[in-house]
Image (cartoon, rainbow, N blue to C red; front, side, top):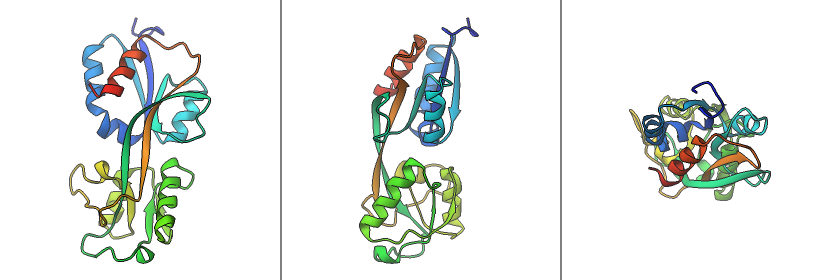
Length: 199
């Protein structure tokens, strides 16, 4: 039944997982399992994990950190986060980088970015925030500030950005999260296997 618990799978993904890394996996899953009513929420990691813990999602693909010990976590991939800024300006030394347009304060990616910038000696003067990587890219193009994004997202789509420095500022781990002891629909195992193998 498309409306029964067996036929419905409630998933959540951060933007980059849904639109870049696993878009093809989601298309293939829908083709292979047309009887499954896949409901997908795209939101920041914190929102997804809140919904997962409340039982509103069966699985959430988002940024892993050390606070997920109450969940079953399977690592999927590692992303490199790089510095992007106006293309016509050299990067210069880190103490002259910025100002910044970044993911919102408190987001898992923002924590990683700030730690990486401080480790390099870069000031963290944030002039704008957005959960949407495309919005951050556009702010850079408008020269409102510099940003730190996953390389694959910054380089995809129209008008891609190029990193200002070769080495990544930080890395983030994307993982599939689910509740320990939760009874999941059978299709959850199929989707999980496809996410893990990328096929």
